Image (cartoon, rainbow, N blue to C red; front, top):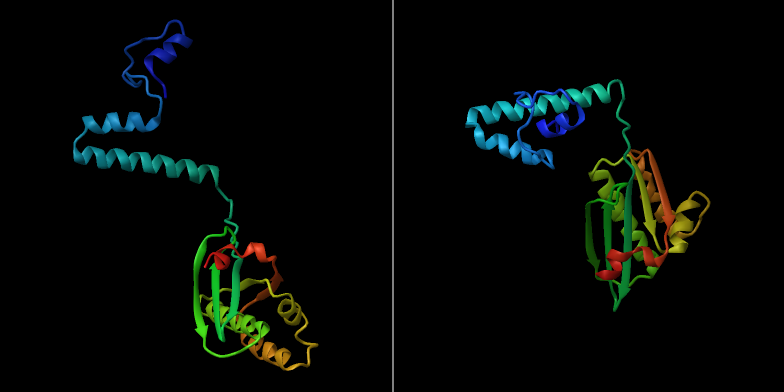
Length: 194
């Protein structure tokens, strides 16, 4: 910030009593704003903040002129299923590309089923959540290798679980791009913690 002492140390014949310069030495801009706000009444503070905001916006408009915003939305959904004692627990964690958690869900299924079927149930629930959130591009991550491979080759799979996978993915026409990735077990930190 331009203070009398700083400019007079740079320029030799400088008037020290210039009214456009600050009288104190401020290390941060917020100190200057706090000091200025102590001297003003409420109406003047509103005008002062409005002026600061307008100058900041004008600066941003000048810097970012004609730069279109890159719209990027890649949602990753982590899904998991845990089978124990004839009860299945499943969950879905929805996060965006920054790994900010947007939402999720979990539930129990009180019937005997193999791990592949429990994972498939978690996939079906995550597809429902993706549809309800109007997500166009989704990356589903699972640590079940056989399910990830079956989903990737679902058009060629003629087994019962393959048929169920095809039925589940028939409802994904509103999703533009659906990818299912296998991830290492150590990547599922949230489900492992639960």
